[in-house]
Amino acid sequence: MDQVILHHYPQSPVAEKVRTGIGIKGLSWMSVIIPRIPPKPDLIALTGGYRRTPVMQIGADIYCDSQCILRELERRFPEPTFFPNGETPGMGWAFSRWTDAMLFDFCVRLVLSAGADSLPEDFARDRGRLYFGPDYDLKKAQADIPHLIANVASAFGWVDDMLADGRAFLGGDKPGLRDALVHYLVWFLDGRWAGGPDFLARFGRIGPWDARVAAIGQGTATEMESADALAIAKAAAPAPFASPDDDAGGIRPGQTVSVVADVDGGEDPVVGIVHGVAPDEVAILHEDPRTGPVAVHFPRAGYRVMPA
Ligand SMILES: N[C@@H](CCC(=O)N[C@@H](CS)C(=O)NCC(=O)O)C(=O)O
Image 1 (cartoon, rainbow, N blue to C red):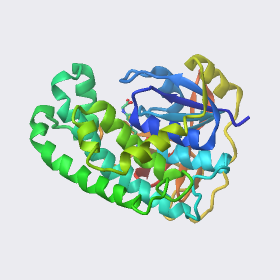
Image 2: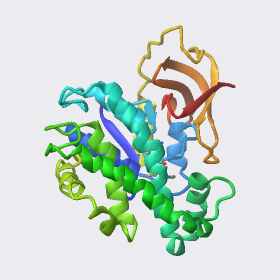
Image 3: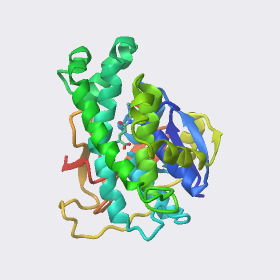
Image 4: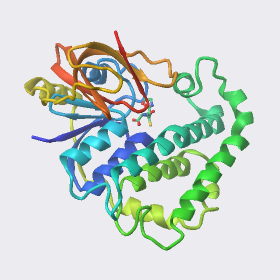
């Protein structure tokens, strides 16, 4: 009933973060491979317009953004927890705003500008707009590379320091959310930036730690066609979502809203009726002939939810 379907592609670092989270929980899951650049008609049929990677589907519930996905995985599959070693979830989610907003942004701009000369044109155009804004110029961005490297080095120095007492994982003896949140950045720099392996070698504890995280694996994946995933959504109904009636942002179930990432990636907002709202999440209803009604879930942190 809680069959996890991940819509992703192998090269996606943010999907790598979620695959690592799935590995920590030891889940069996279905893997739907989506295109790396739009058009993504089958994904959009599920999300109502959200085009990023990855997206998780469970029945007729669609989870956009890795923050929302990982939180839902923890809710549905609490053991083993993402917060072992006596950690509190709040600290992990606050940590995620540093890794996912600031640090991922530095890493992605570093990888794209350092590789600008060899990127396929359509990919460079799409990612340039997504990560550098409307006036992007990847060639000019190359002048910024030393600045980006210096900032990532500072951050990775802190990560290295988190391991200084000899702990196996970032929170202690057991792997948790924070390991997934840093592993994907290391994986991305190592695999996609020519200078990555030398850069990472500066941090003596990160390599052995990252090998331990990679050794956890990624659960057990079975390939699925996107048409089959759409049929699963159609045969299911969105799960009920109990909402408090005093949302801090003033959003109410039944209201029509637009939801879009709170950074200018040139993306279209997703518009729909609020199915449920909580301090960390909003779910809106969307319907496509191929999916029937689905609830599309987004995080609140990092997203702008506005009456539409
Ligand atoms: N905040 C999002 C970021 C997702 C993201 O930017 N993913 C990249 C791939 S790693 C992406 O969507 N690239 C464009 C695409 O796949 O179409 C999350 O945490 O899921």
